[in-house]
Amino acid sequence: MLNDEELEAIRRRKMQLLMERASQPQVEEPMAQGYITELNDSNFWATIGNTKTALVDFYGAWCQPCKALAPKLQELATEYKGRVFFAKVDIDRNLATARQFQVQSVPNVFGFKRGKPVGNLTGLRSINDYDIWIGRLLAA
Image 1 (cartoon, one colour):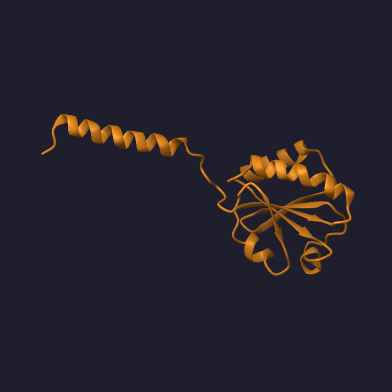
Image 2 (cartoon, rainbow, N blue to C red):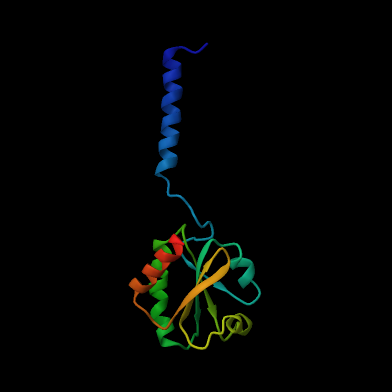
């Protein structure tokens, strides 16, 4: 039989483990690694279908507003690591996916919940616009 000191030591170890687990951030979106993933026609739906919350930037390599948006999205990807999956699709190299979403102008950022599109923001916006939109996606 265990004595009081042994029971107290076990209790302290259990409490320490619980405190360590509680201090670790909860991962809501396992695929959200804090960076932007390049998707293409062949892996788009397989990837997006496995996400809970995702943002996909449809862009063109020639597009200046798209180039201005890229660092903003990277900043948000870092901020929302573990909560939102960020990806991008080059519309010139992935025509089938761009057509599915009827992308006519870029940048065009689509939001997804559980693999389904739920809206988009067209054109270059402020980082706050994207941040507010992401908050709404997470709350939905």
